[in-house]
Image (cartoon, rainbow, N blue to C red):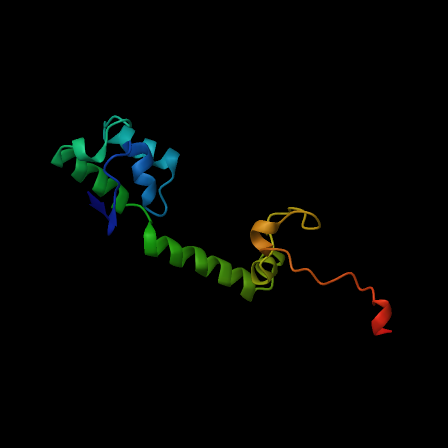
Length: 125
């Protein structure tokens, strides 16, 4: 099954498999399946063509994949352009939502960059 150019995994439960589409999370996937009256534990290979079409229509009516990525990047660019703190944090690659960075924040900052102790050895004096 393909939705918006993404192949949905066949062996997984639909509530998990639909999250392969960028912009569809677990809760969104469960809402879609509830609206289409499809069991979340069903796999993609066991869907009828009608159910498949209903799910495809629901998902394609949302902002997903390339449209959503463009929307998010435009929002970040707008924050940078107006000079907001959040935009500055995005530009520097630091956490934007108030987390501390003195000890944590490695996800955004990347691996540690060791600078050395600053101590000069005796033979180099």
